[in-house]
Figure 1 (cartoon, rainbow, N blue to C red):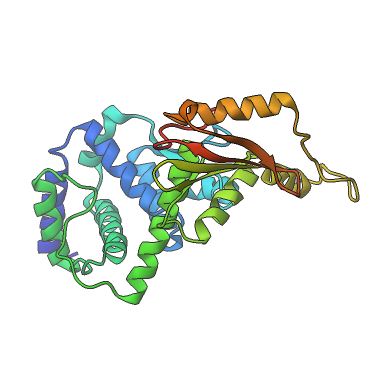
Figure 2 (cartoon, one colour):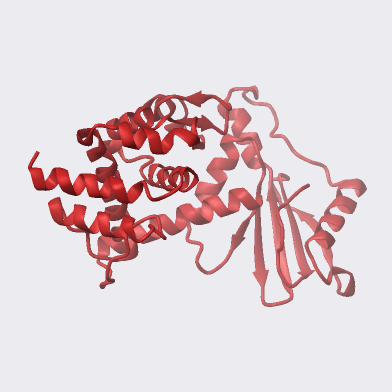
Length: 301
């Protein structure tokens, strides 16, 4: 390693140590999350998890995995969610101080790859490489690192960057739908997003709920139970040839759907409502013509 390169790495580490342990925890977790699914970074993520004391807690099984690869091979590849967790936040600064400078290269490389990924998505130029990158990183960290990646000048999006941007938007919409409990079907929701949300609902045995606004006053809420049925079919818990599971529209179901419509409608009581109707497959409920201003909260029923 060239002496100037080593000196720049020391500057980057010194600038990084200006942040508190809590700030470092948030910063590293955000960088790690951006690299999930990037195969070329697997070994680096494993090393950094061990060096910095991070693990991945599975949101599916609540198991805490020591390395990224251990989690990915068991749960990540299967589509289960996980979150990076620092096992000893108070020791983060100490771990950085005692880390050999040759190992700190992994931190600089992680920051670089996150910046490259963001540049592709946001239509920005790629960051510089080599010593120029280390100078930029040291300057950015020295300024307090107000964002997860160093800001760089904007430029016209290339075709590849537009595709990457669409993929990132789709993933954000899927995550938002999962957190809310329903998918809001707007003009920015492409054909791939409902498929991804339905796939996640199937893996978790949950109904697929979508909401579509019609103008400023009306909306339709669709509750599809086929994702639950398909989950049991995939697990071979339904015998071949048996009738498909179905729900019979009873007065109780109608009352609950009417209550559901009113719960998500600020003015539902002032307008006419068509409470519900079952699709031909008998596993889809639809609430139509619900007078409402917006869909303010997550589905609870």
